[in-house]
Image (cartoon, rainbow, N blue to C red):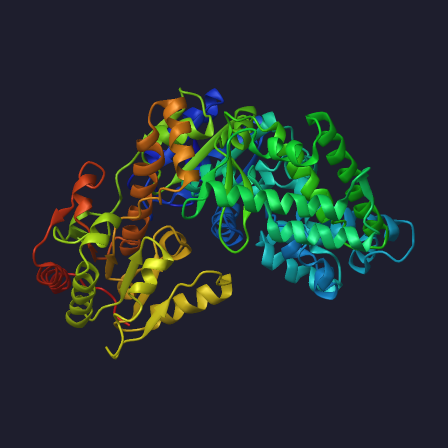
Length: 638
């Protein structure tokens, strides 16, 4: 195993196997997907061989994470490597997190990457020309960057650490970071830095590397396909159209054609969106026939397709003028008219084999161009020297490989959990389910489930997480833990990261605390609960995706392309969500835990979860397991 010279620990368990497979993929310039459970050291097992290969062959390593907070572990492991072999690495985040000017300019805080880049570019030019630009960039121009670089090489700072290093000097950490990236052998950044074409081009330029000399590591890879679909999807909301109309009035409401002004066009679009929703929405959304919107436009305007295109081009021009005017005024170069017109143009040119045309209901009705093919974003991975995809729950690996467009000869490595199966009990109730049809017919099902949950909480006073398929179902059970004398916490939609982590910290500190969360949410995926911080997980139902029009379109797409629509779009994501949730129980070799699934449909997943078994007495079985385990295992208590 070549990478042992940079591996800062004594390899254990499956770590040698992971690194040997990564070595082989790097040698042939190929790709590897590896599923290995939490605690197997995937971060360091990918960094060590990648770095060793990069150093010998003049490559660089880009470690991509789903969230900014996950970058910290990469930096921690890089510091360990740096103790024995001096290797420099940096973290990178967006201007929204790193730009100190945003604290002084609240009007810029909600700008997207493109808008902030344009404002920043103008301010930097003004500073370089000796005018009134950005004060933080102006100070950076006269700053000893080499001194800062030497300190960074010594400390290997996280992004947060680097920002603190820049703060006393009043220099821009974002721009300083960009300067230092050229010397970094490893850069860790959020997904968008590679999968957004505009940002990727900038990053490769800052790193001074050609894409063919890049080794890309993707953490929490099971999130990538959905992320890529969302990245390439677009929507046009009624609220956005209202803002476009207001913007039109502010500039004098220019005419687009002889009988139609911009505000009139926006009102017309609103009418069409509303009419389309009334016609096609079933519950949440509906599929829109391919030429429906264009047909309605031509009919209402009594015009041809070419006339409609000319009208939209005219709108784009007015919107672009607004953006440039705002930019000259030092404001965000944003135009709702521009966004509206561009969406309508793109909608008419969509490749219907790759996108679903949807209309979404609710308070803010919208048209949505939903990307069905994540490879439109992820296909760029084939241009890299190699890519390494890591996850604790990515099975079936073939679905992931096919969806994101990796070659068929990609190495697919499935490793068993490093934890003994004796450490975990997974049982399910055969007489309960959250299946929609059953709930509609059996009005006693939810009360019986609530009664059982209440009895579990009363009889097993250990830290317990209740996982639900959705926030709406979670609300149905919100009162089940009332008056138990135990601390109760809730994951809530729209929580900030700080709010979420405070809630989690309070739960961890409790003895016999209870938390309500959703499968597929932030608590179910990225948070560790070692030792006695979590001992019981109750899954209230199976998290099958809701049969929306969007979901059906995705299923049909995967059926058409791979012949595995149900397996790829229903079963695979359901298994991942469940196993992510159950996986919270075991984070270290000494952890013990019980998962109780309140749904008879769990029997259908015997192949994916071989240790599951039915239970007619879940409380008795859970208590006996926990009591037996703690008889002979010394687990640290609070």
